[in-house]
Image (cartoon, rainbow, N blue to C red; front, side, top):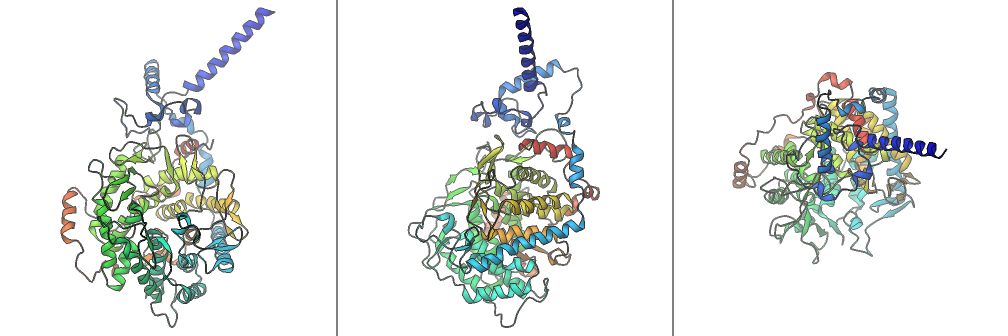
Length: 638
C-alpha cells in the first residue's frame, strides 16, 4: 500500500507541476501583460521600466512587455525556435470568445432611454444646484452631507486644497451660470445673474490660485455676458431690461486683481497665487505648474478683445511663449513644474495629466478662437512630441497586434518612463484629440479610461497600470471622462458613447448621492465619502451628461458653433474674437518661432474633422470587440 501512495503522490505532483508550467508559459510568448500573473510581475526591479534592452524598440507595440525584463525575452526566443514550424496564432484570439456580448450591449440605444437619461442628468443637476442655493449660497461651495455652506479656510491659510479655489465670492453660483442656459432655464439664469451683480465683490482679503480664479470665475462671467448679449440668441432672448454689461465689468475687475501675478517675475511666467486685495503675498513661492501658468490665454484673450485692451492677452501670451521656449531641445517636451525666476525645471515629468493638461488644450482652443497661426504651430509641435515620446502600444487603435495605445509619464529630456501611473485628469485628452481630428487615437484612450470606470464605478485620481490598482483612491466628481465621451459622441454618433454616459450617470447616482447633493468619493473601492461638492460638478460634469443625451440642444444646431473652456464654459466661435484693435503683440518673436519649426504644416482651414470616421463605422462598435475585451482584461475586469 505504501508504494501505491508514493505513485499517486508522484502523479499528483507531476500534474500540479504541468499545470503551473502551462499557466506560466502555455499561452505563448506574445501574450501581453494582460496574461501575466502578479507573482512574477511584481518581483522584478522597477529599474526594468527604464532600461532600454539591446535590440528592442522602446516605442514598440507592446509597452507592457518591457516590464518583464530580459528573462522573458529569452523565453520568447526559445519558444519561437521550438514552434517555428507551427502556424502563428495571434494572442488577441484569446479575447475573441465573447465578442458578441459587446455588440449586444452597446450597438443600439433607444430614443426613449435617451430621453430618460436626459431627464436623469437634469434632475442630478437641480438636486445639487437647488440644495446649494438653499443651504450654502452665498458661500462658495455646498457640503452635501451636512447640508452646509463652505468658504475659505481662514484659520489655516496653508490649506491650499480649499483656499486655492474658494475666494468668498459665491463660486458655485458663478461657475454654474451658463449651465442653467444649457438646460433651458432662462428664468433661473436671469435670477442668478442678478444675484451675482447684486452680491458679488472681488474686493476681498482672499488669496486664490490665479489658474482657478481664471477658469472658474473669469471664464464663467465672460461666457454668461456673451450669451446675454449674443445677437443670434441661440437660447432665445435671454437678456433682460437694465443689464448694462455688469458681468463684463466684474470680469475686468477680477482680471485686474490677477495682474500682479505677472509682475516682478524674471521669465514672464506668473506667480501661482495672488491676494485679491493686496497682490502677490510676500511669502509666495517661485514655483508653478505648466498648466497653471499656461492656461490663461483663452479667458484673458477674449476679455482683451471684448474691451479693446491688449494687456490681458499680452501677459497670458507672454507666459505661454516663455514656457514654450523652455521645452527640451531633444524631445520637444515640457516639464510639469518650473521656477518662475530662473526658468529651471523643478519637475521634469512630462505627461498629459495634472500640471500639464490644459496647457496643450489651450494651444489648440486659442487657435480655434483667435485664429493665431502661432498657437496652432505650437500645438502641432507639442502633439508630435507627445506621439513620439509618450505614446506606447500598437500603431493603430483598431488594427494589429500588441497593447492598446496608452500615454505614459516620461522624463522631459530623455523620454524614458518615470512611473507607472496615469491620473484621471488625463481623461480629457481623447476630447482634445477629437478637436484635432485624431478620432481613432481618441477612441482607444477613452476606452481605457472607461474600462477603469466600469471596474470601480468612478475614476481614481491615480491608477497604476502596472499593478492594475489605484494609487490615489479619491474621486472628486471630475468631468474629464464625461467631456471626452460627449465629444466622441458628437464626432461619431455611435450609441456606444450613450451607454458610457448612462453608466457614469447611474454610478454617480448610486455611489455619490447624499442628503443634499453629490459628495466626493474618498475611496473608489469602499465608496466612502468626503463632505464636498466641487463647483465643477455642476459646471461641467452635469452639463456634459445633459448635452450627451440632448440631441436638440441649441448648441448642436449647425448654424451655432461653440467651444468649451477648460472649465466647460460655453464660448461662441465668433469673428469678433479674430479681430484685434492693436498690432501684433510679438511681431519679431513670431518669425523666430516659425524658423524653429521649419516643417510645420499650415493650420487647417476647418478644425472640424468629424467626417474622418467612415459612415459604416457609425453603426458598429467604435472599437472592435476583441480590443475592448483586451482592455477590460488589462484593468482587471475579469
